[in-house]
Image (cartoon, one colour):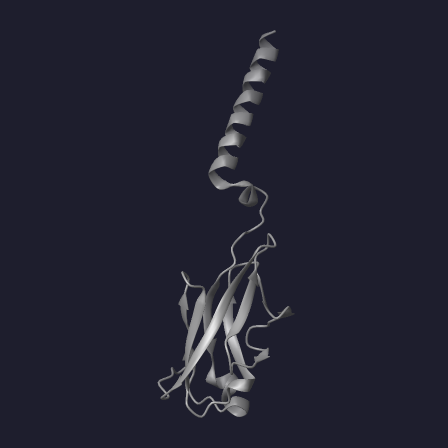
Amino acid sequence: MKKNVRQSAILCAAVVCLSVCLSVTGCKYVTGVSPQKDIVEFKLESSLNKKDAKLEKSVIGTINRDTKTVNLIIPDGTDVTKLIATFTASPYAQVFVNGVAQASGKTKQNFSSDVVYTVQAEDGTTQNYTVKHTMGPAAGYEL
């Protein structure tokens, strides 16, 4: 009888512990599937865009997490129709434009108008980031 009471107490404690864990962290983290879907870095590197797009200096995007936008100031004279972006998204997330997977530092993109990057989390949820640009003097950065 003592053995059954002890086993019941252990089982009850385990259930309580698991319940607290699930309520604090949420089921997604317990199962190991991440809901994170952010763009954490976005830039146009001159080394990747000098030849085709005539980008003389690198451009670092300003990310606004509240409005889900990335703002770029692209130097005058740059061909915005064939730029290659280098970006970092949340761990385990994938990035798409119009349903086409984007490879950081490889995929050419036409930035003549706003471009919507869709970040898909490991759990399948998505978040859109709109990349906007203005043309301006070549302020740029050396990368």
